[in-house]
Image (cartoon, rainbow, N blue to C red; front, side, top):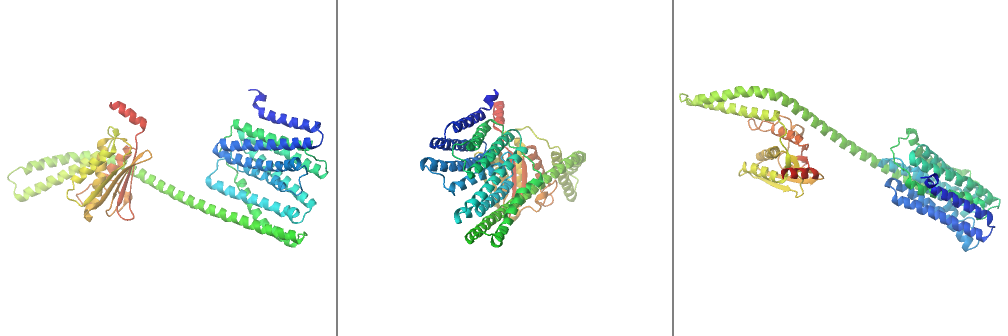
Length: 583
């Protein structure tokens, strides 16, 4: 692509500016030139507003605020030009002085300053966005107040053309200078496409500011007329900005995480503080030093009081937003602390299981052999007929206790040698129903009501059927054992889909868990001696880990315990592959 093709929009803008210059030089002063100037100026401003508005609709979300406020600036600028066209072409008279369109022209720069200061090329956090916006709105409110304080009294209270023109020109040049400064800072702290965009807007704004100053001098010397060469700078500036807006669609406008120096972050809040502190100073100056007529002083005092009310509202809103941001940060810190604590507990639990498993594996094997011999010899002794009843009872107790010890060793070995079995695609619903029915059959006549609720869309999981079944049985038995001492109760079991996970909740109405943080520790049990080994829930915990899941427990405020089990659902692709392999 050639140079002219790459910059075709800028070439078109330069050509249209050159055409305007030719018309201005060749067409004599009069109604025809004024009509051309006003019509052409209105058209290009409305075109610039349309282009920026289109960008606000079609560009990425982070850029829309920038283009929308730029479009607002062009709309206000267009209204001023429409006013000129209406008076000069329709009414065939000069624009009155003062005019409401002077106010519109003055404030058209404000949205453009806001657009650039918003910095759409920077990533922002939500809280900082609100605080920055409020601080900037306070500065804009103060700028409007300053215009009303200095210019309005000489326009609408006591007409004074000299003071009106003086203060208007000073503030308008300051406003354009502020836009140039903001664009310079943006260009220096941006990269790639954004630097190109800010650079073009800066060049157009400087071109306009210089031309605006020359135009003001021509008006003061009665040398200006519509269509003269004094209009050429603002015509060229508008076309330049419109060409920039169109070309920006093809530029790489990437949003980046820019880390501004901490000192610069304090500039806007300090300027906002200065704006607030300046209000009493303006009021005191009006009362003690202002030589203006009483009507002007009263108007200025009313303006200052209105400004205090407006900026005071912003201060209240700013504090309100800041308080909510601090509360949100406090909640996030609390959640992060709880998550860290939970993760730490899980890591400690894994270390416990791993260390204990290594220790138990060796010890259980050594204990199992002599226990087997004790059982065998005791059974042989038991079968001898020459034992009396007392001896026979003692041997029976030895056999019972030795068998119990062997069962404990078997549990230890199962715990220590815990390894994931072969996994397949498992439907948890039928498995959960079967585990519930089996445990209910083992507690005939109990007053424990078990309610089961299974979501029809419960996802299937990758798992070992036997291992999952034993896990469900252990959790349900643990809940039933907790309900038995109180004479019964309710056990609610639910299985639901949450996102891509299968979430199982076991909630009972029993007395709750004495130490929820220790419930998965090996050998921790609150059951009577001889009723439990304290390894059941530890095995459940290990099984959940093997299935890449998570299990937690807590007590309910109204009483009872809740075990929450989360297992990742099998993906669609995994399910398809499993189905193909089974077929």
